[in-house]
Image (tube, rainbow, N blue to C red):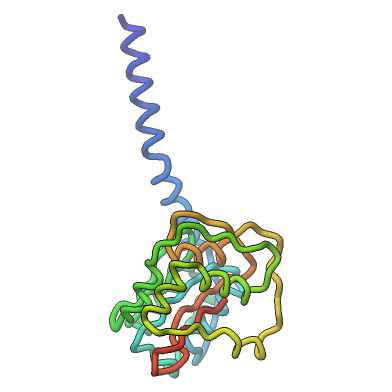
Length: 222
């Protein structure tokens, strides 16, 4: 009788551990990401420059959903030269640019509009994707184009008479090929695809926004 009860208790304990482990791993991953020390000093830097510095120099995977009220001429000052964490840097950024907030999704820092959120961009990023299977070793432009050509995304763009700005940025950036890494992902959304790319490839920053004030040409960049 005693042995049976002990076995029952052990089984219950094992079930609790199994059910709680994903949450624990997610918490640990999030805390590991945001608590890592970051030494950075920027003066009169734009928001995008600050995020590029984190993604390029410190290899932090980041995604930004542009706000309709984004003031690109706003300059930031960030200094953690006397010690600080990624969380401190991100908090400093959103304190100076309060139209945004930061959160961790899929192991990636996502900068999300706190106000003046563009309804179409929000809808695009939450659009369900059945399967994304890009070829390995392609350029970041091809990754973007493959995403835009998915039937779910293509239909959304067509319905709203929006084009993807594809060719203008080829002139300004070299054709950097992605390393042989599998970026396939299923049963997710557009944000999940973008987060997968910057988390697992060498391209560490995604930005989604509009080419200009007309809002008829979408930009997706890495």
